[in-house]
Amino acid sequence: MKIGTVLKNKVQYLVFMINEDTAITSYEINKNFGTQISKTMQGFIAKDSDKYNEIESILNAIQQSTENYEFIDLKSIKWQAPNPDTRKILGVAFNNKNIRKEVHIDPGCPNYFLKSSSCLIGHNNPILIRKSYGNTIPEPELCLVIGKTGKDINTEKALDYVFGYSIMNDITSHGMKFSMDSVAVTRDPEIMKPEFINWRKYGEQDKNDLYFVYHTRSKSSDTFGPMGPWVTTANEINNPNNIRIHAYKNGECYTDDSTSSYLFSIEEIISNASHYFTLEPGDIISCGTAAKGNKNFPNAHRNILLNEEECELKINIDGLGTLTNTVKHTQ
Image (cartoon, rainbow, N blue to C red; front, side, top):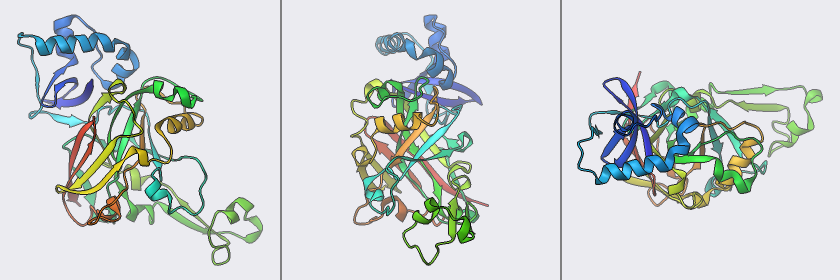
């Protein structure tokens, strides 16, 4: 089942996909079948996900019926991120073997950052890049949506907590990351702790220096979280650890990768994250960047500078669909 969120005449609707061109709203289903399905994705995940079989039967009946149901014309709507009301978006950094090989000191566990829900945009919405952002790149990723509350989740049970999967483009400004989001500090040698001294490759040149990077503006500026077009429920994905990901700029492929390139599996990410963060219904985890390059784009997404060129970005993930967004430059 594929479920999305759209705006029509400035009214938000939860929609269920009949096919890639046709959808029906929860309102229309409730009106015709006497159900009480939530009007929002957050509400549906929290309260109605146990109605999956009932809704699946209704959608099958609609497809085979000759009744005149009121369908949504997807050409006349504005896509939103599937769950615009999420409480948190958790990103996993360096979770790709093609990138992780560059690491010279490895903590041996997933690295996390948070994105703000206000950065989310939907399919076919523009990514807005200001000149002041500097070098800004796309990062095509599989993301998942949590279906129920979990804490200290066992790896073996981790997939039971997944409501569904979607596509995320984790837009990242290196220009902001290594300028206004970074601070370099020189500390007196007497107060430098062993863990500070050990966390570096070269000991003498900068042995009293500390470098802090805070992924806030660089990861969470407005429009830096394209997601969608919809959420595909977990029962339709047999193995999330082996899904093909293709990403394109103006129709030219810049990465052809797979979630099998992830260093940490989906189960390991969920389990590890739940030791530090209580995972709640509707939470989003963006699992890692597809980073395998090709002849024209040897560094994959890092060869795409969104601040230099307005362009069209597409991410296709097998079984999930295609997320499309255009890059627009703004003041």
